[in-house]
Length: 64
Image (cartoon, rainbow, N blue to C red; front, side, top):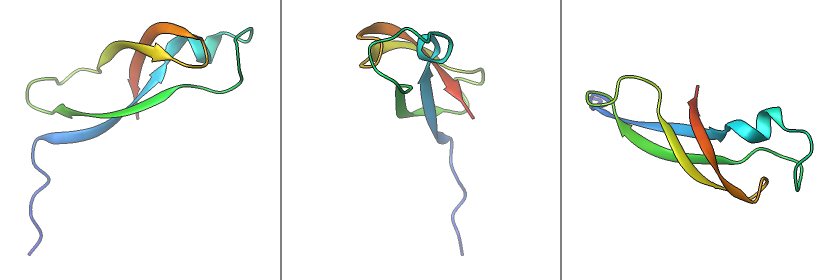
């Protein structure tokens, strides 16, 4: 029988500045994958991480 999924989810974080900024260093959008606890963090995650396309630290938001 299959086990249940558990409380940890694999999510994708996407740079918010790359989506809206057309004048950037290189084309593309920075994405990171990470896990979050479904019970502790019910809302969407926002983390400040380095974006190689913007060449600076930017806010990365959780996407579907």
